[in-house]
Length: 93
Image (tube, helix red, strand yellow):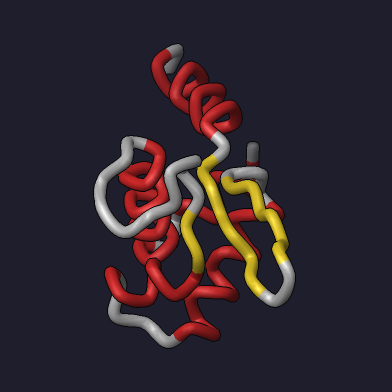
């Protein structure tokens, strides 16, 4: 959980999670299965593709996102399980 807290300490990563969450809810510019490519995230967040990729890597290592590679593309989706555990932990404080 420590790694997840550190990952979410960066506002850009929180914004990325918001974009991924919108994808799972079927809100604009995403694949029907709730996945999103880096290109779509870059359109919504004013950071370079390499910076977005770096942040996605941190989120992936923290367990907050899933990544699926298809040919040269990587598609990301949010992993709600560790976020729910974090929410439960915080609600007990």
